[in-house]
Every structure is written in structure tokens, then in C-alpha cells.
Length: 114
Image (cartoon, rainbow, N blue to C red; front, top):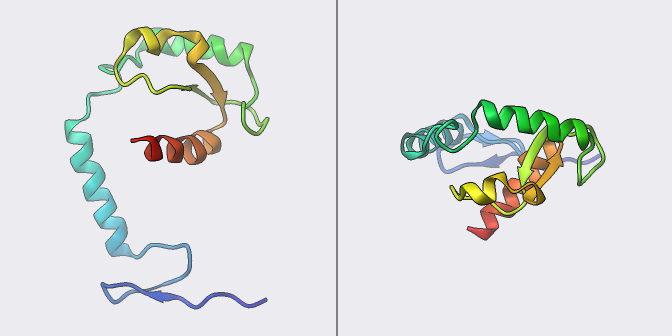
């Protein structure tokens, strides 16, 4: 089975298709660290012990991923709340997702909406 040849990055690294070189990974870490400096903590965004209790109860009542049917591990806000606590606590805005669906599909969708 043929495979694609590695690509040469601007830094000079040869990287297999679908991979990132060490320089790009370091740049990603630096960018994320800069972003996290300005971001409120999870507790400040509303993800406290009350949220943990409500999340556990919701996942017990809705145990499968809304997208793929795998066991759900994340309670996702369908419409991003962006600090709006009324929207944050509105159960009709919650959906159960597995971690891969939340990390891949949902995050890509939110990135497109920004």
C-alpha cells in the first residue's frame, strides 16, 4: 500500500503526513500558555462542585453520546454560554458527549463559529 512522502517544514524538519514537528509543537504550547494566562480559571467560569454534582446526575440520566452512541463522559453546552450563567445552567442547552466527539467535532464547530 503506497504512503505519502514526508513533507519538509519551513524549519527544515521532515515530518510524516498528519504529524507535527517538534518546533510546531513547541509553538503550540507557547501559544496555548499565552491564551491561558488571560483565561479565567475553571472555577471562575462556573465549573465548581455544584457543576460536578449536576454533571454526574445528568450523565447518569443520559449515559450515551448524542453523536456516536458511545458512553458519555462530558456534558456539553450546545450553545456556548460564554459566561452567561443563565445559559450555563439551562439543562435544555446540555448534551451528553463522549470525549472524542467533544474534543474533535464540537471544538472544531465552535472554532468555525468564532
